[in-house]
Image (cartoon, rainbow, N blue to C red; front, side):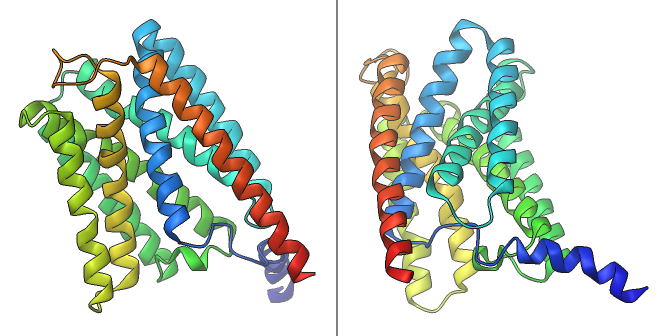
Length: 261
């Protein structure tokens, strides 16, 4: 009986012979910040045309990307980063709907999403006794990982809007603030703080950093002192840079695999 129950678990673990997430390097953080800006601009551009259709369409695309990612057996740059980009777009819309459609203040949504993130992380820790991304070696841990990623995007979106609009800092000051803030966990990690805690702190901060930069570039001057390039322009430029980054990451991954073999 015990062997029969253990067999499916062993089969599932064999699908995860290596971690399903990339190595955390400077390139990882650069592409992560790029996806946050891309998600912000794309979300705003689509929502300006038809918010309901945009939410439904991006929700379906996110589901398809997640299925693709979950079916992989190891880290694949294309599947992983496309999923991150779709989480960025859908997570932004989810956070915006709470304020724009339901009228909930950014201060409330920020606290609400922070609590949601705490619940997801707490549940993950209670279930697995680890929050390390280097331990994504089972299907359940990967599901916890992507739930956490979605929560961080929603929280980061609300926090960025809170500083830009509610606190009236504007986009550029907000970007500078979060750019400095993201250095704090890096410095704390260097000084001996827990790596996992500092990783997730920095991960949350990438969202309002990238989004504030995208809004500063795309929004008009009359709205929190933007440059007025347009959300559509920023979206196209973001996708172009993202595509180039993906080509480089895929080539790098293939090169490493050839060396390993």
